[in-house]
Amino acid sequence: MPSSPDPIVAVSQRVERFLQAQRDAAGEFGEEALSFVESGASAATGGKGFRAKFCLAGWRAVATAGGSGSGSIPEVVTAASAALEIFHAAALVHDDVIDRSDTRRGRPASHRAWESQHGSRGWAGDGAEFGRSAAILLGDLLVAWSDDLLEEGLAETDAERAQRARSEFARMRREVTIGQFLDVAEESAYVAAPVEAHPDRALRVASLKSARYSVQHPLQLGAALADADAEQYRALGAFGHPVGLAFQLRDDVLGVFGDSAVTGKPVGDDLREGKRTLLIAYARAALSPGALRVFDELVGDRELTADQVSHLQQTIIDTGALARVEERITEWATEADRALRGARLDHAAVSELRELARAATVRTA
Image (cartoon, rainbow, N blue to C red; front, side):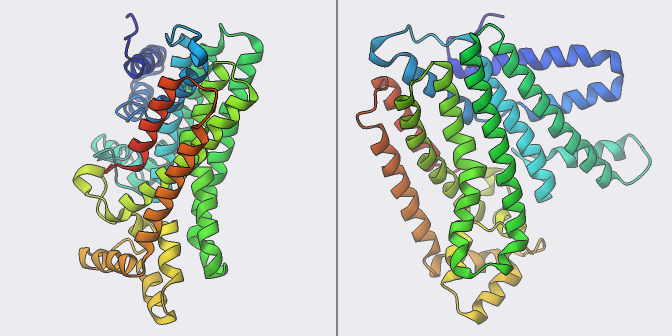
């Protein structure tokens, strides 16, 4: 099948070709193995292509700077962008297990889907435990697939450029894994840290788990594949990190106030999961000791009622936490825009980057 001229469609097609090859290879291992691969394929499709868009934009910003290059996306960039999307699917599968989430993108989360399959097939043992085990392994499989797809793309690339790309991808993987752990740890460790330290601790998680992972590294991966010089690489990093922070803060707001019909998650899901975000840190810092005790008793309660969610939402608004987070989103969006001024990058690509930044920070899902 020829690739689409639309780069994001081409990335989706590249993912699908790769997934079909995995289906073909798994057929000899039996029906259960094929079902496992199919669940991986399901997890790897249906996303927004957010990280792929930034990778493609990073390549374009460098490759066509000064009018050089045709602007046609090389196969290696399409493959790298597709690898990012498959790795993100792995992160979501593992994230849902950690958070005990029931849904993802409006469908049952992978561990819930495998729990259901366990029951429908009449298998022995505990269905929930089986579902968790299957999902952990599924996430691992998706990580392996992301490496495979990246290497397929790099096979025809010169050694120096391929090594830069591998290093960027590996750094992204390390940092997001550390960030994920810190996110989990904070749900327990917050009680031992001074209240005034919580905003910085929340931002540390946001930087590693989202800002670098979702925006900065994809941008710089694309730039590395375009053979960016040090100045171009730094400019894209200086743009990408604040955009990524603003993106995560918007995600935090939606996790508390988002419309479930749009987000695909229950209203107030982050409150039930006990996420220690900047939004929560700002709210806690403004509460009296008595009100703080009540607040902490509710945040992280899996059985929160709609009225309790509404009470927490109002508390977050009344403390000024929501307004402060919205201010930070605006500040980081402005900082990102400044980073692009005067940068030796393609003008059309810079406009695209600004539009991507707006879409990342002003959204409802």
